Length: 116
Length: 114
Image (cartoon, rainbow over all chains, first blue to last red; front, side):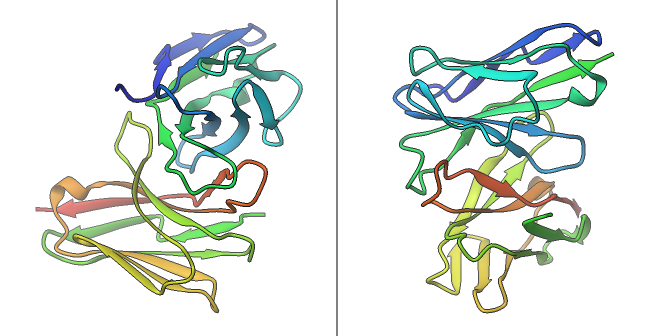
């Protein structure tokens, strides 16, 4: 089927506002990852879901960042009280099994977040 | 602390030439080393990957060379083509960890001149 999709593709917001970024993984993939890519850098891990649960959230920078995956499919990354330093491309990836495997992680096109 | 170090930051190669990108890692628990290719406006896409039990893996024009004792690995692109112009990321993962998360290098912007 289709690959990983992310919406919106671009999001411009003002400092202090709340934003939600959505990820639709490949159908049947149990593992879902969020990464953040700053300009000129490689993606950095944020959080990993196995099914509905956040199995590893060690990459979330602070408590303004939160993510959910209530039905084990679509995931939403939520950022409260946005700061200019949050500006980056937020990438979502999914894989068939996740932890304990070398299954390929398939990335979406990302959401470019700009905080003014 | 950067767990995967990548060089060079940018690379220009003539069409038909060999492109070489180098990486080094710190964590000996890493057991899976993928390379990703990223075009502007797109997410990274897996290009080729290797496990440390082999010293070389070749897929078409792309070859990974792996030196476990030196904790270094490299990507060679033979007969480089303009369509290969992209940013390349080396990466590492510990499949036994809680997440099998990928640790990326900082990237190499490759330009192939026609």
